[in-house]
Length: 60
Image (cartoon, rainbow, N blue to C red):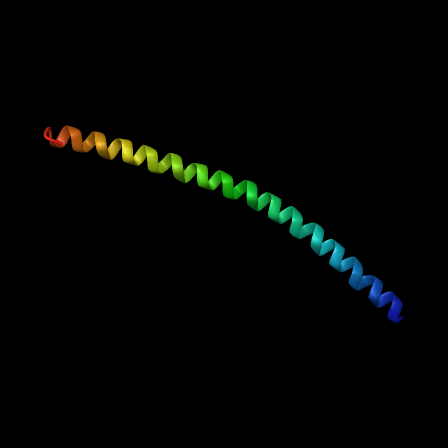
């Protein structure tokens, strides 16, 4: 009975480790995508705000 419970605990740990590694790889991909998206958004907003300032104030 104790051996059976130990086997279950070991199996649970292996399953959890597999899930965690899958989650971290997926999270890493998502994190990279989010960072790229934020960078593009910042560049686009910066570009349009500078364009808007240039049209609003010709001395800038």
